[in-house]
Picture 1 (cartoon, rainbow, N blue to C red):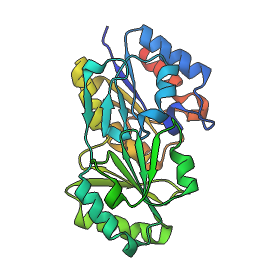
Picture 2: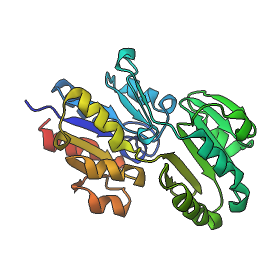
Picture 3: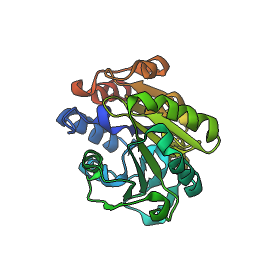
Picture 4: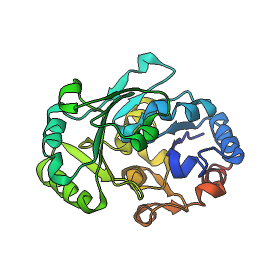
Length: 268
């Protein structure tokens, strides 16, 4: 039997809108594992905010977090840690010019530790899942390690200007993308880092060729993964650009899209 690697985005893909995994989807994923296929999570979330789903699915595989910037094996320390952080000095440069772009706040994460430039209740709510260590203060002084990921909160009017600045001045060292509404947040990781980058490391370990990767996603942080995978599958609720590059489109996250596709493809 040919083993497949099944890569699952979380929000809007594996998870229903209420942030739960449906019983049918869970059942089909367990069947896929029993049949010998490899199931991995590939998410923009940090590990602390995806751990509960990893455990719910009884996974024993590495996990891709921060859109590929942090890859590790929660159940096997000897697998090692693949951490691809941003350069601290570059982030300090961006903080220096932040006032020009009316930035409301900057949040840096060093794996599971969170650092805020300013106090912000809404953003605190966003990151408190998993009870991370949180520090608040001037990041130019407080940040001592290269950050895994940086979130910049601005307003709609200045988000385009900020992205133009990042593309013009720092394109060779960082990759940025914008969150969907209602958040006007720009997420930054190291250049060349994305979910496909993280999954390739896991495929190398399991000796699974790219053409036997089945990847499911719904947002623009899934673009590289869906384009790279042998079976890049967009959810029915996915953004249009993702559907256009996908090999196929399944049902929505509310209609067990993952389960429907895997049952058909793998004859589960």
